[in-house]
Image 1: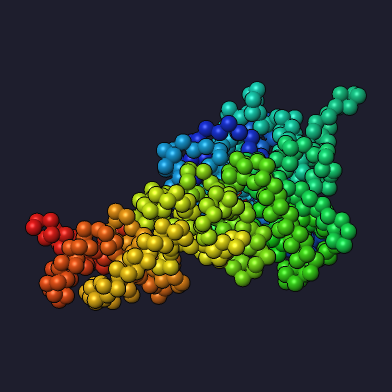
Image 2: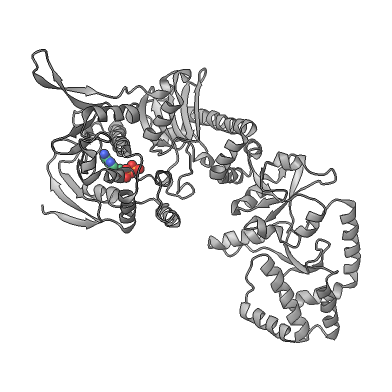
Amino acid sequence: MSVETLQFQAETKRLLDLVINSIYTNKEIFLRELISNASDALDKLHFEALTNSEILSGDENFEIYVIPDAETKTITISDNGIGMTRGEVISNIGTIAQSGTKAFLEKIRESEGKIDEELIGQFGVGFYSAFIVAEKVELITRRAGENSAVKWTSDGAGEYTLEDTEKESRGTTIILHLKDEFCGGEDFDFTNTYAVENLIKKYSDFIRYPIKMNFEVEDADKNKTVEVRTVNSMQPLWTRNKADIKQEEYEEFFKQQFHEWEAPQEILHTRAEGTMEYTALLCIPKHAAMNLYYSDYEAGLQLYVRHVFVMEKCKDFLPDYLRFVKGLVDSPDLPLNISRELLQQSREVKKIGKALEKYILKQLAKILKNERERYETFWADYGKALKIGVYNNAYDEKAKDDLKDLLMFTTSKDEKLSTLAEYVSRMPESQTKIYCAIGKDKATISQMPQMELLKERGIEVLYLLDPVDEFCIDSLNKYEDKEFQSITREDFELDDAESQKIKSEVAELAKSYEVLLNDVKDALSGAVQEVRLTPHLKTGAVCLSTGANGPSLNMEKTFAAMNNPFFKAVRILELNPNHALFGKLSGLHSLGKDTPEFKNFCELLYAQALLIEGIMPDKPVEVANKIAELMAK
Ligand code: ADP
């Protein structure tokens, strides 16, 4: 068939430009990436063969070949794994499906083209890393079980060609036509067998399939023959004694096994014996994956049974909130040919999962206790996941109990993060509740009119800055025996004697303004459920609070963003009786509750309360006109 020329998807093209033009310190990384892909392709074939052994067509040797060639200036990586159909080549190699792509490219734009490996690593360019060293890449592949093969060729500059071709057996062969600087030189000579052998030993030693290379050997008579040798040890790292494994070995293992660009921030290796036998080698990647909270993120641990690979992403071990944990479980107690359906029902898997969850949380608690800074680094990347965990376990007291002491928040005290225990330990004796405030950032909350009195009384407030925070706190309900109290809910009050005194004075005063407050409510024609005098303001004139239960203003915004406009917060307008505006309001009221002056004044008071909460009034132009009118007077 003729040669077909296709365009890369726009995002792929941008990514390729970045990869080709960026300065990598780690030129050799492509080898690890391509060997990793080859190993994955063998895994996939292995998995498919568990239920359909015919797909192997009698060839049960799983192997990877790496062939450097100085003459043709190429390095070839081939596997006899699952291979790809023409359609799969187009969708896997020409496009990037991850939902994080846009965010990633945006981040690069922000860094003004200064792309670094860390950034690339968070995204994982995998196959495209070939273009760091190659001026042209050819990929010839034949899907296991099919007869036809396809050849993909590209120089990485926006286009690729596809043509039908012949291939003797299943699998994928990738030929890299190396740029001159990577052939024959002192550094980075990827045509040198021994240099490449060393790289494989360094990066891909634990690959569980043999990686074979051809070595030229001379016999006693100086006759040259070619000998095929396996260069990786293939010993699964996790089967070795923990004490004998070096930190670098763990790090390399996670890099090659889980496509991690950087060493993980935490490595967890645990072994259980007794009723349930298993080994788990887990890690928390250095950075959260770009799509961690998107639906296309695939969580799950690799599953091995008696050191034999069974499945890539087994979701049944860890709860969803620990989706960021990568790693593997190897157990002799599970059947080798276990299907996904059986896994879901397996009591053994549940048991191992429970034990792993407990173990991970215990390790995190240990880090928090002993290495605060390290924990805060973890928290910056993964705190959101734990908070979602609390929310997802709203009705599971035990699960919430396990998580509550791992949570961190900023507070009004200083810039540092605090645990709930730390906040409680600083509470004055008279304080019975944990006060919290919701806002988009610290500065906004700090300027909220309700904060003024709290600051004066020296009362610390928990800042809920992430939309998920409020859902998390709501689900927790209490910490120890202390309830959480939002300072913008109508039932907010301070416990100290002074505040209680002000509260009863204001309540007394409110009795004589009952009619006024009712008329303000009427003037706002249903926008608020109640208008009341507040004991919480000092110099501010107004503020908005919401019903003691039900959605808050913040939740209303979150739901609206999710196209769910029916969750409405109950709004209460609170007025400061000591503010000059209140005197003015009362004066205008005596002119008559139906006068435009009184009505406009009420509307502007409400508009102010909305603005303080970051909410746009319904009719901004009308509000602006009314302000202009008032200013011109
Ligand atoms: P990743 O491996 O992170 O998914 P890559 O860009 O490295 O990203 O590869 C994209 C996809 O191309 C893989 O997910 C896989 O489906 C396919 N692929 C890559 N290399 C091979 C191979 N040697 N055999 C079969 N499929 C492959």
